[in-house]
Image (cartoon, rainbow, N blue to C red; front, side, top):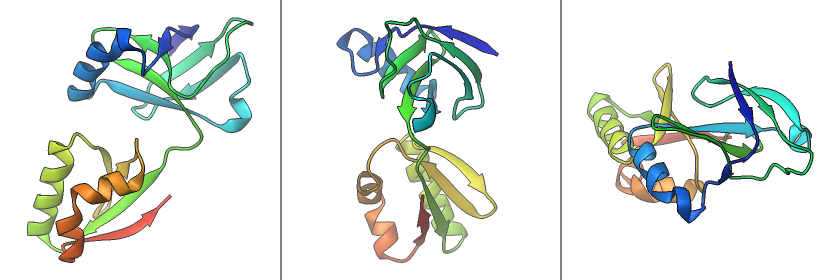
Length: 149
């Protein structure tokens, strides 16, 4: 369990931009999704999208916000997101299409997981941003959208 006390800043603070950008390219950004019911709590325990068990405690004068930076070191950053993780499920038509989709997902540094023969994209931005990047695959029917949750 990783104990996190206090808020370091915000993920969009200029002071952290360079380090967060470098961590993003190395897959070192972890998101801690905080359900709305827990947003006002000063102590809670949740697991990041990468499986890190976190015990969070905040001072009385601290207010948790979307984008709060709770942890930053040379290997990873833990950033708060409110609500549930949004996902986009995709299915490739065949093996060749699966290779193309996998290449795009990797090249674009998308956070993904696999569920059977589906590629599940963990969304960090509006879904249309992701769709635009693989529009030719979608339009050609090489990749089919299963659902967006």
